[in-house]
Image: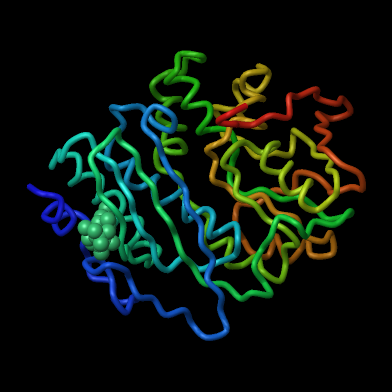
Length: 312
Ligand code: ADP
Ligand code: MG
């Protein structure tokens, strides 16, 4: 199987939302009138983001999911993606599963794969995603104001807990691991939530490097501080069992790989946020100043602020 057969067999699919998709020197895309293009890239590197023996179906899912999460965080509707991959060899069984995982998630969100690049090399997966958003209502990191409430979606820390188990840093029972492994391997990007937030949220970010790190980006971009209440951060049953341990607290606050949304909204919009009827929790408030204070009841938690940093 040569490079072009590989592309045709595994990555060329009808792309009715594009004027021209895979197969030419460039794709041609028409953005809806009155919208702007939101563009984002995320790369998954073998050995850094996943183990060499990672399940290819899950990898296909996650490669796209982490990019969809960025569209959600901007309040953009995802439309098109390109996929650039380096592969050590043309392993058909692997490609079959990888592309199945990728396209099943792409189909759910109506995203068309319109191009990419395929080369031989150490396993590396890179997606560029493109979506549409109203220029005026795109959710940025810079809009948080003192007095705003801070919200997060879903539950935090499960992906990091599953990873800690795989690394042997914590030992979970089979049942416990099974309950958190999907968070690590098959994250469900919050695209529907992201589309509801323009007009309500003042800022948003997706949690990829850990809550404190990513909320920290919002605080820095907005020139504000925050006080959050550790006990109001939603966690799973397994996490709750271990929550007394510092390692578990670190998973929740700094673990990363959550792909949940963290956003701020005026306190006056509290009931509008609840009316979205999505799994959302208010975890604190934006204050004047800088940095994030984490309280556990009346006690201040002393936490390292760092999330995942590839060069830190
Ligand atoms: P070029 O040499 O002009 O860069 P390529 O031979 O790299 O073209 O790719 C041929 C076509 O296949 C292009 O339309 C490109 O976008 C597409 N393509 C290559 N790799 C992938 C991939 N992994 N997924 C989707 N499309 C791909
Ligand atoms: Mg090329």
